[in-house]
Image (cartoon, rainbow, N blue to C red):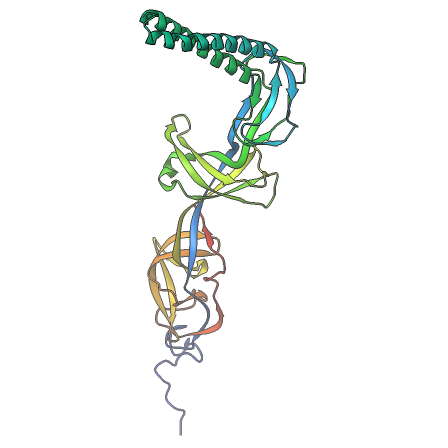
Length: 352
């Protein structure tokens, strides 16, 4: 008896042990698949900013006078209304005493005049002149008291004073800087955002701020306001964020790096290696019932190692991440391993 007849697939050049193209109707192709997962992703905008105190002022005098007392220490925390500096008040006290004496005299005359008015012993015009004198003396007392108050320089708000620049006995003039006062319990950070990014910036967005003085530490805050005008020379708009600073770690004037979180959303994400680009389209191979199914997808934001899927996949499906060059649409597959890299423990940051 002769040898059996060769089958339809036999003959020179036919692959041994397979009945067709690799992965299509033959042996299952070994692959590695990953689950389609969901992540909280966001895009970030980075900028450089300058720290400013919530309130800041230079302590100066309105008068030319001599410093007679300094009531604060360098770097001391003070409350609103606390006396910081005393100036020579001898002349102001004397002027107030003179004004009070004149007021007392005019008040006494005014009271006697009211009694005379009831008996018509005093004309109305005379009474009005006496009353005007009394009112003028009251104004002089108020002015003298205001000058006396000006000899006490008080903190306009609660905060921390800087280094003092004068000593007792110094003759100061209006505008002479005695010290600085800053309320840094809240830090304002001003930074510039390009015009084309303006639509993605709004009040209330989260920012993370870093300083070279504190490597690895981040300070959280929120956007508080956006300038009403765009700088025509830089085509950028100034944005202000506010950060709680209870430890006073950040100082006014610091150079800061601002990371603005924008476009936060929950997204369907797969490992980036699952994508199979063809011309201007993107495809993936889905593992279904031991077969690979080719499917077109629409992608969104990318980050290192993963990509957002806008359409074409559902959470829980499995995509092939290793072996995509060997599989065919509808061909048999065999998972050698399972990875769930598409579902990390932390939220992802998309590349802008």
